[in-house]
Image 1: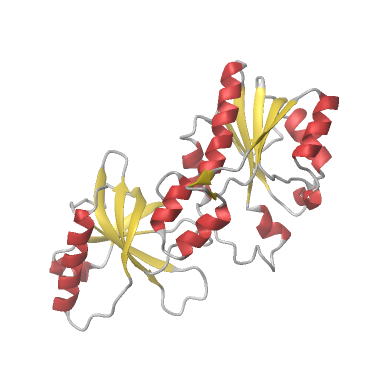
Image 2: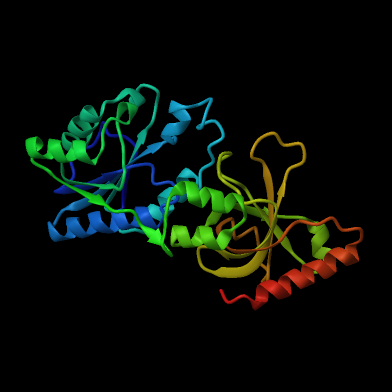
Length: 310
């Protein structure tokens, strides 16, 4: 996948098959769209391209309303890493500025998708809107395609167990700690990636070596406080374990301390970063009145996690 962070230097993509949107979460519905543009591109000996935006448009359009507290399922780097696994040929990230937000749907299609990217096919998801004041949609594209000589397709809503999938539903599931439901919507394991370091050394005396992970972006959506079954993925290995999420005391922003224990020891001096996959929420956080109580709870947590098949 070739990453483009500007449209000014684009010279056109061969027989481009294009889709566009925020694609927060890269969930099962997003993947259906990407599979389709990859398929069309292959059939036509062309290239697939996804046009997305950073930051999320709502943060620019409604900074004091719905965009103010909007949390993203994935950071920008996490989203790029997910899209890199989909078989896309090109990922184009357009900086979403107040000026760009005034781009009309006609200008977006004509000057960016057609003139810059040379789109021959445009694929959109169900109920997709774009352009200034959300004036563009599938019907608009379909009418314009007759004049500008390109194809357009709309992908229907995707369902999981007869329930439609959306980023809003995924956020709700994650806020509730319902990891398994969120994972089903996503069609992959929710994860946090970042740099790793040594954690609470007091727990090492209880037989639990701990590590911490640094959150890449402040608006990254973090599940509620509690203990979760996880797997750490590094460059050359993977490790089962459990993670403890604690909201920092007195924090007025999205500040969390994320500490995890692995069932195998790693060297944080050589394992600098990784990806923590979330499988299941085990319990709420608790207050312990002795080291022995804490140790016994950690032993019970580990036993419960080890019984899971993952």
